[in-house]
Length: 174
Image (cartoon, rainbow, N blue to C red; front, side, top):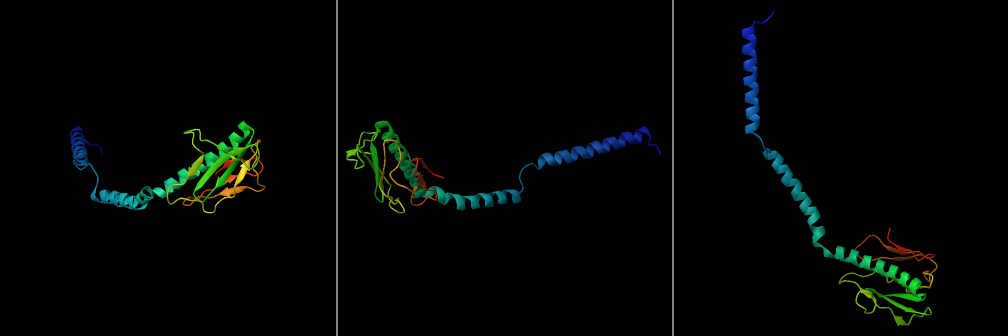
């Protein structure tokens, strides 16, 4: 059965009006539903409860900073030993690292810091220390350390450690 021209025209107009009403309703109700807003607030609350304490605990950041300074100091000690063709001794306390140099493994001369010219000593911030005080050692004129096995240095509040390779003196963190 074939629809006449008038019926088809009326059908198209009705369809257009219905479609227009649907589009008008969609324009009027744009935005987020209450459920969506509440879910976003719940997720933000959970993230704030988990992440915020990590940013307020400065000991973790200070421990990482101290470990980075120790690692850089050990690398500097090896470089100075090679460049000056002398021994550079590394001594540890529970909260500091100090560097000295000399023509023998006894190292009697204070090594000065490049930044301020004072004695090369790295002190840990309050509450940060070595888990176990590392053994003192030295780098010879070729940059090789004086120990036979790798030396592992651990700082409190961080999980990674500093390793000094026995054969080469390579200083790294995993």
